[in-house]
Amino acid sequence: MMPRWTAGLATLPFAVGCFSPNVQEIPGNDSGESSGASTVAATGDVPDGTTGPTDDSASSSPATSDPTASTDGTASTGSGQDSSSGGEPPVCGDGDVEGDEVCDDGVNDGGYGSCAVDCSALGPHCGDGELGGPEVCDDGNGDNGDGCNLDCVVSGTVLWTRTYAGDGDGLDRAFGVAVAPDDGLVVAGSSVVSGVEADVLLLKYSSDGSLQWDAVHDLGDDSLAAGVAMDPDGNIGIAGALGTSQFLVAMFDGDGEELWSLATADVGGQDLAAFAAAFDGAGNLYAAGHLYTGSYDVIVRRHTSLGAQVWEDVYDGGLQDGGYGCALGGDALFVAGATGITAQERNGWLRRYDLDGAIVWTREFAGANEANDEAYGAAVDPAGFVVAAGRTVPDAPGLPQGWLRKYDLDGAEVWTVLYDGDFASAALRVAVDGAGQIAVVGEDGSEPSESIVVKHAADGTQLWFELQGAIQPFGVSGIAGVAIDSQSNVVVAGSNDADVWVRKYAP
Image (cartoon, rainbow, N blue to C red; front, top):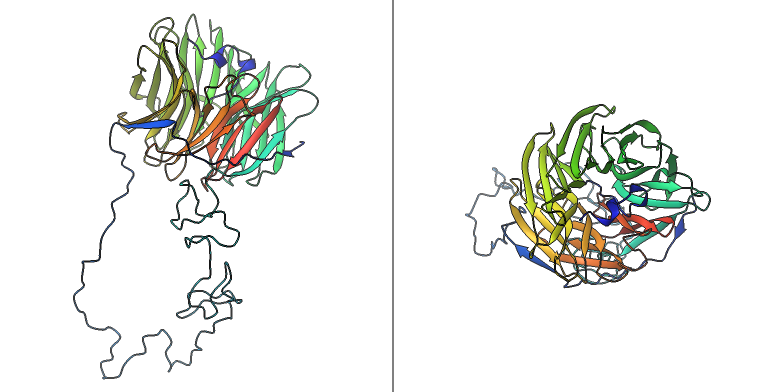
């Protein structure tokens, strides 16, 4: 069974990414309550680099000589101020932290965010474990995502929401989002004006949600960007399609100007498209998708920063296969998708390549009771482990279930989260931050389906979620992409009716 969204790229409800006028503020739903709707089945240790607490209360140090003692029998001051040097002692209130002062802001009134009158301690402040000043919460532990973030904002709080409506009465859609080096956002998709053919749409937002520029590129017949990535220099790479028969990759500079584009058709291919994009550190662009020549195959390509194709790999499992997500970490490229096992059933599929295209390992996975499994997204954590997201559709009556699965460097399963179908019937997109926390977007089991955003700890424990009732993942509307910035804020993008919709959440 092919995913509903692969039937035609012109009506693609979402695009799988690897791991802009008329901007309108929309009131956010900041419900950050947690749900017990997901379960974690641990199948191995999670080497997260943490250690248990150390108890030093029973330790003792041997007596040592006092390095401040003078050899001539006189005592040293040991205060950092040598009375014989003529140096001035610190002055509490001058705005400079000196000597044994803990703080000195020049006001020192002991108020919130200020310093004590004698410069000996901070006044009430975020992180002291006491609710005060403008704080919404303060648990004092300095962690993000656990209900109260290190900036004393509730985890999952909506920071801002934006919509974009292009010229005329056309249809603007977002299929992917990527974080820029300056923590701004690039949103990619398509724009159709008055029923004319679709063009590639790119939007650049600053970190505070201000639209910096928008660009529409006519790259050929019905062109769209299905996946988007950014290289370390701020250049933009997309993967997508022209119509339903050409594999499209393109690069743009940080201002949205086209650097190059390449659309290729396969001899005998009736359906060729790219769904996911990723950059390596050298600026090479990788893209994954599918090719139809009587049955669907996975296709993966690498291009140089100038557009030349370096290598291609095609996986033909014999039936209905496809590559829908990709992620790059270090010297590893991961492609997530599905492979057919019967005419009606598919297994989830994950393959690791090295950057020269050599296959390192491949994993297939099947749900219980001959379920139909598909993997839609992938992301790499700081340890190089890969997290895949997808869904399982039971052969018997019942709701589909979304899932997350983490694999170690050798492809061994570390843990799996299987969502209750009412809560999340599909996990479609995934991103990982620098602490290993995981953000997922998908759909719930309601009718019609509604989009969800879920945050997990590195061990798979659910931290928070938001059900976005106004945004439906299939059809014209839906959340289609997720990314995480350097401050661990979660950003999502999709479409709401005929407009692009972007939202940013606190960690």
